[in-house]
Length: 262
Image 1 (tube, rainbow, N blue to C red):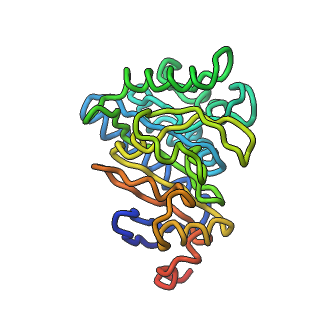
Image 2 (cartoon, rainbow, N blue to C red):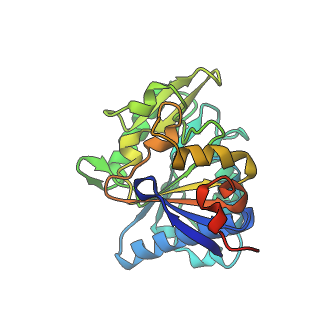
Image 3 (tube, rainbow, N blue to C red):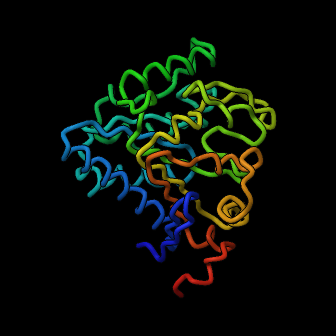
């Protein structure tokens, strides 16, 4: 159940829920609505997932009834907005974890699940091949593929997908998927870039926990500084931006005083 909704203009609409369990359920309902809309129009629904604890909780809900049978899985194509440079079998793999938690237990055709290649190719080859696949499957508008729904998380440092502070990928304008080094993590990441994220019909940030409260306040209420807070770079051009956050994450927001008690 949504406790309250607040409009932050171009920075998005914030929907506050009570706790992580409610956050997962609201996320699942959005996914269900997306697939139902596509089914009604007799077309595919194209969705990109993220890593993190909230998508895992969402997956656990999706794997159980009634959602397992409510979603028309054969209308859905699943991608990932970013990925770690690890094998699919690794517990660090976003796609691997999603498969192990729910995708292997729901009736979605295997041909409609699209993980990155992270073995037998270079990171650059993987990014190029993923971009080519996205372009071949997802309908484009204005020359950029347009996803129906992209789920994102926000890190403690304000990063989203694998767009980390002070990395060149934040300002990428030509490529829709890139492989890049993340010095602070001493690793390589694969990620959607702003042009692809911002072409989506709907982008949904999922943010939970008190540890994210101050950073969420900076992203939504602070000055524009996307190099410091890459989550601010997400502004759908002709789509909608929604933040689903729990009460703990919303606690530092100026609007928190307007939340109903209970």
